[in-house]
Structures are given as C-alpha cells and as structure tokens.
Length: 289
Image (cartoon, rainbow, N blue to C red; front, top):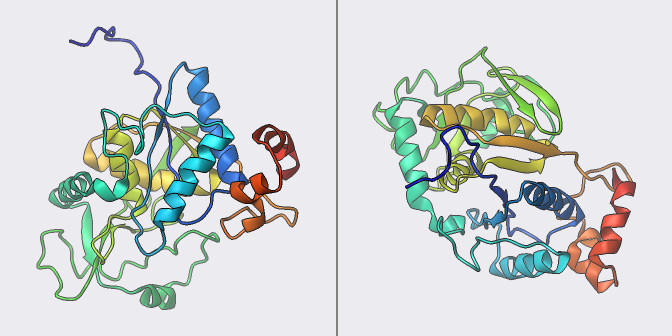
C-alpha cells in the first residue's frame, strides 16, 4: 500500500547516464556533479545507468574506467550496474525487452514508419542548415512511401522514424535555461527511434529507461535541448508523463570549443595522473564557463 498522500509530489529521482565510448572528461564531471548536487538538495539519491548500446563505439575497458573515475571524483549512487536495485538491469545492453515494447507501442499507434534512406541520401536531399552536432532535418522521402506503420515492410534494411507533427510548437520550461520552444518540422524533423542494425536510438532508449526507472528530473548538457523536444513527443505517444529537465551550460576549452572525449588531456584519468584532486578541479571549473 502506498502511504504517500494523494497530493504529494513524487520523490525526486535523479540519474547519471554516462556512455563508455571513451574516458570521462571534465565537462562530464561538471554536469554529473550538478546532477548529484540537485539530488542531494532534494534529499534524494542518484541512479547510475550505463548507456552501452552502441557496440561499435564502447569498450569494456571504458566501463571499468568510468566507474573508477566517478568514484574517485566523489560520486555516490544507490542503484546501478555494480550495486543493483529495484529497476535493474542498469546496463542498457541488457534492457532490450523494454525498448522493443516501446517500439511496438509506437508502431501500434502509427507514430513511426520505416525509412530506407541512407545517411548519404539524406545529406544530398537536405538543403536547410542545421546546428552543428545535430542531425539534419529529414526531407520526408519515406513518409509517403510508408503512410502506415503497418504497411508492408521493405525488404532492404531500414530504420524506424518518428513522424513529428509538422508545425506544432513543442515547449517546456527548463530548470536552468528557462522557457524553450521548438517547432516540429522546422527546428527538427522526423527522427530515428530504431536503427537498421536492430538497436534502439538514443531518443527512444532514453525515454524508455527514464520512464521505467521513475526519473523525475533529467540533468544533462545544453546540447541536448532539441533532443528534449523530440523526447517529449515520444513520452506523449507512449502515454507517459515526461520528467523535469535541467540543461547545463557546456564546458568550453581555452579555444572556445566544447570539451569532448577527444580532449584526452582533460580526461579525469589524465588529470588524476597529473596530481589534480576532485576539489582542485571543481575550483578550476569557473575558468571554463
């Protein structure tokens, strides 16, 4: 029996969701630290999820290094791949049943359609500019070919794309960036939710996991603001309430470029080898703002 009052807010549940495709860098640490601070401020705990779906990029050595670096920096989690928990498993590679269930629900609701276009096809067809690092707006080539998710599927390999409601403004209030508005079909187009190699895309996996793990606030980088608009549409299609969002400013290097895993000199592992401490690194964050 649930002893929580009917009008009580759900208990805050935050999460860390690193991907083992390289060593964690200072930008990851700052965003994750924000997530931990916000969880502690709400008297709650953090959940750790290992986003290891992309088998072409992640390596097991990075999983061990990720856990070690997070602990060294001072992160603590009560649920995760190393400690278990009531929403296990916490490795995405072990959660395919959840993703397939979400995909089938989207298909049953006719929110998705098969797409046989290659990345080269799309690049050649796209004329509108798109933000660096974001996917180009899909020109809709396969929308008319496959008007229904239950149409006869193509014999060639295909992705499943989410059909966005063109012209609709998707808005949300971000805990850090304030009011956000994105127009479907203009700021982002039909996006992939399931890849041709039978792997769920980030947008679908993230929604399925955050919903299943009852995450109440997602803390991540500001480069994912547009992704939030996409994910809100998935939440709606699945009949699920979205969590709150808090997007952190990206950390830039001394040249004004955002930190990435290619910045090996700023990886937590390298900085520790150079004698840095978590406390000293947090004091130095200000210079990267």
